[in-house]
Image (cartoon, rainbow, N blue to C red; front, side):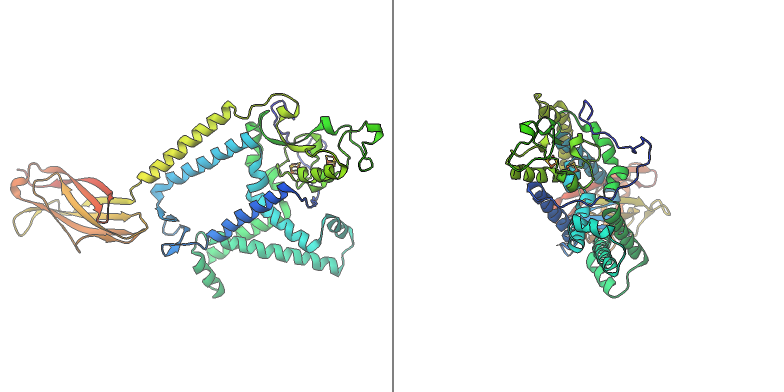
Amino acid sequence: MSAAGAPQAPSGADGGLFQKRRKIQPRFAHGRFARLRVLGVIVLLGLYYGVAWLPWEGRQAILWDLPARKFYIFGWVFWPQDFIYLAVMLIIAALSLFLFTALAGRLWCGYACPQTVWTEVFLWIERLVEGDRHRQIQRDRAPLSAGKLGVKATKHALWLIFALFTGFTFVGYFTPIRELTAALFAWQLGGWETFWILFYSLATYGNAGWLREQVCFYMCPYARFQSAMFDGDTLIVSYDGTRGEPRGGRKRGTRGNDGALGDCVSCLLCVQVCPVGIDIRDGLQYECIGCAACIDVCDTVMQRMGYAPGLIRYTTEHRLHGRPGRSLRPRLWIYAAILVAITAALVWSLAARVPLGFGVTPDRNQLFRENATGRIENVYTLQVLNMDSREHSYDITVLGLLDPALEIDGGRPRVAGGATGTFAARVHIDIDAVESRSMPITFRIHAIDDAAIAVEESSRFLGPAP
Ligand code: SF4
Ligand code: SF4
């Protein structure tokens, strides 16, 4: 480990850029952190597969309607001009990741990253079909047989079914999932939908079934820069070398070698459970995703030996070496302050957001005309963009002219939630009220049932020279 506590990057055995892949078949670990990981998988995948089916006001609660360029999230409807909110949400997500990494290391990688979560499910399926690590290794070494082929085919078939379900759900966030399901059973899926379902399914199958830890090593950008957020007070999974060394085998309940050995019994179980195949006793390494499987298994060994748990534990580099640590460091305060400020700004901006767009376009064909009653009249096209999820009727008034009259074709505008309405309108004033050839006017629109939904738009009223 470096002085700053940052994990080291991997390289080939000869120091070159290429490192031959070693197949990793992790042993299953039991314990409190394993239970936490299972809980994480259930909650996160439950949300992923479940939320797509959640209804909200007669439509899907979360839906990215790309053809209509609208993004529904519960009661909100976001339009392309609202994408600043999405950008801010991504910034908040990135800052949260920085904060939690500085505080608790690779907590995200170990428990919540999609790669970790889906790989965990693929490992469960593998274990269900192929048996534990020992049987998997034995089967891999055995010559090809009908039995071996059957077991492998079953595993891959289950992986593919699960991956297809994942890909289907993913597309269900872009095409209403109920319509997608009906189209699937009627064999009427569109070309793009079929392509994206297959694409996302194969990505899941490939990443979680085949590539696994290789994604973390070579493809994940976060794994590359997270070391910049580590310092001596970041929570990391560490082996306590002072307590564990010199390591060596011994009889249960003894200290071995006349008590000269440390607590590590060299059982190698921490290596066998590691999903990235490293030996944590060599120090914190770039590959470690902080899943804590080695903590669980080592605690079990310590318990069996009658030793205190925690030979491998969550700690910080400073505490591990007996130095005073600081949980709340300036960088945490800075990350937290920026995060709180941006989140507060987003919440305020969402609360103050008026879900109404309004455009006024004067008729270019005829600048003005005298109507049947002798008043000077201008024609406009009004465009009303209802960005709310509910239908609204609107009241429109004209300001800035002396005694103006507004007539809208079809009467009071009414626009469905998430829709746009276009209306022809005429504004006329008495000829004596014309003060110049071009007068500024303002159109004010507000929803009848909610006075807070109101906007104004400026335009010009043209007339003859007074
Ligand atoms: S599991 Fe614990 S006792 Fe066994 S080799 Fe790893 S550190 Fe040593
Ligand atoms: S070293 Fe331990 S915490 Fe790190 S990836 Fe391996 S099992 Fe998980």
